[in-house]
Length: 191
Image (cartoon, rainbow, N blue to C red; front, side, top):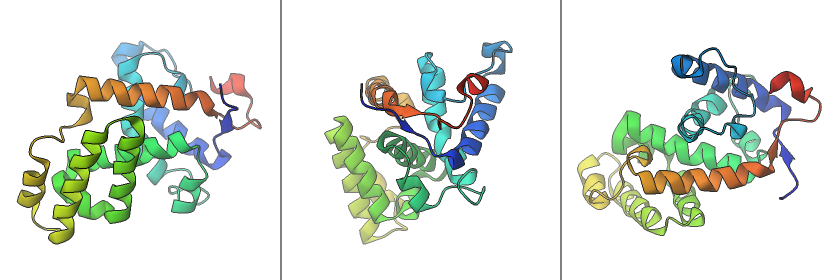
């Protein structure tokens, strides 16, 4: 197992926000059980996937040195797999809320980064589809029909594609073995 890279201390507020969201949405299933702040240690796959889905909104809106979300530089200080989770699920969240408008809203560089993440995970076909949609967006960012046509039905929500969702979860489960809470925290207090 690789040496664990601590999450920066300024990310802890985002983890509290994430834990609060999970407690709210999973209250009946949890039955009062408190989830760990280190969400990557959650064993239940559905709960872990939800944590990954909610991670971007938490990291981009809370924590960071300002307390109002992480800057691009602060995101770059996170462990690589953590960065990948924020990027990939930010796009998934964008698709769920904005449809194909999420592509021009994220911008060419960010979408290409996400395509590269898919490729890194072993999802080359999903990466290629995303690049086709990006190319359509670059031609006309307002033409959602052209982006949809470029996707040709091959870019479903991850949550709706069990094989791909499992592949993504396996990647993040493996990557999270290299994540840890900051050593200055009393670990027992946050578990």
